[in-house]
Image (cartoon, rainbow, N blue to C red):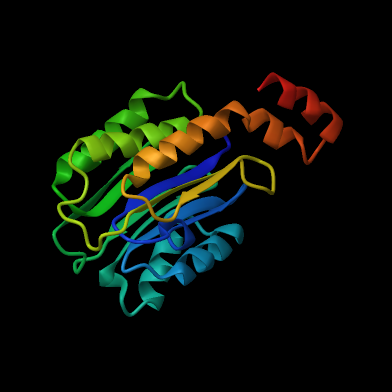
Length: 214
């Protein structure tokens, strides 16, 4: 589709400010577990110079002394994937790579969470990327999600880019008792006005007509 995106949730505050990193026509990365947002920025720089997903992962692994505490997934401009789950993630942690996607998580009830996410993503190929991602996240939650909450707080986020330099979808729930459900509520509202928000920067006059249709 030419789009890149990340959807994520955790039992802590403001996951959208740390984990998802996307650059149009370059790639996407999520840095999870003991997250270091600098790895996301570094990875996008490497991808933008032509590094493959795996070559980028190799550089991250060499440069980070705490790599075994990280969980990282990378997709490059050609759809190639690389994923790494550090040995010190704890509880159940793992990942699954597929055709143009990665499903990964840590602190989960088991592998069935990842399997549900991956299967749902593959089963909904006709949907827009943001919908496929959201359905996958919901499937993971329905399959059991996290084994226990790290904190009393919960957050979720979705970030999707097309070919524009601005995000197609950039939504965050920084704290909510049912963060995934709240993200779904906001996404459903946003999708009704998506064409309007995409058109407004390019042609405000035409965007007004779209707004009237939403």
